[in-house]
Length: 137
Image 1 (cartoon, one colour):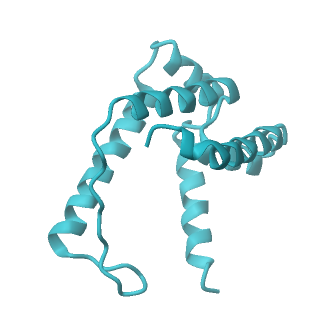
Image 2 (tube, one colour):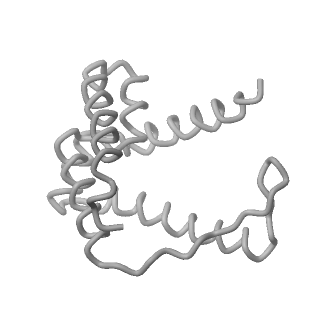
């Protein structure tokens, strides 16, 4: 019962992404060819909403579900790690046709070939854990 709220949030997130066509391979293809603003609008809206949410959490000192204060750790300013990480993420997204959230949504809509992508993502995460100490952080 404790995790039911997360299940409902995940289902809602999936419905929003399917209805907005953010999980559509054609929309992603358009984005990578700079032919449509659709995906950039969705991603930009998410960034702006995230910024507004963090601002409100800081202003109103919102606490977590467990009653703990929410603290944001400042990120280290570095150029290489963001370029390297963004490039690897973008290449994986372009190859698979989906980023991590939509992979599970596409599997839920019946595209079972996403199981291969999910297994590759898990393997990539495992490899990151092995190589983490050698990468720029």
